[in-house]
Image (cartoon, rainbow, N blue to C red; front, side, top):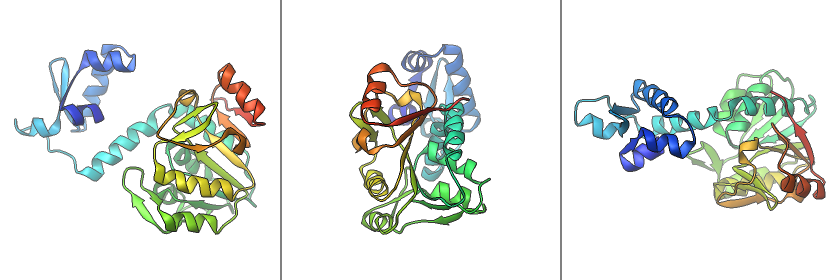
Length: 256
């Protein structure tokens, strides 16, 4: 969707080559997006709905709807791995826990697991997580601050101060990438809140599927030495595994 919105046009062959999938898979995905009114299909390609509207095509989505669709698409990537990680994370909890839950699609998957838990106090700066847990038996709190539209996260100085005024038994963090240097995130604003969580928690638990191993993003969120447990879906590659061991990080590989 980002590619089509940026360029207004993308060829099936280019998508298949970029994502390492077959052209048949690319066509099926484009057909699904077209049925949702997000793109307009053409021979061997896709065009943005804004262009399609000139020819009487389906109406363009609003900006908020587009953001939600992009987030949902990202959430569904590696969904089996994220579900396994979430179950593994939920297995570490007790009713007495007072936890912080980060932003991101894996944290949201964990929130869906927490619906079945009673008594846990959850502090989160993720509006989607708070919405999922609002009707559960968890006690949910949020910081004040500025809402970042892309992730529906609450960030800014007020959010950092609110997180820093509490102490958590466990914090569950998501990352965009994990290397021997540490965990990386794509948002400097969200990373400031992550840092407050790390500095005010007894146990730091990293949620990271194997597709993020070896990848860096815009800003470093944590050093490996700050992490107590890594929950993932596959063993890390040798160099990363060695760095984790040297940093005394316990690695839990969750099974699907």
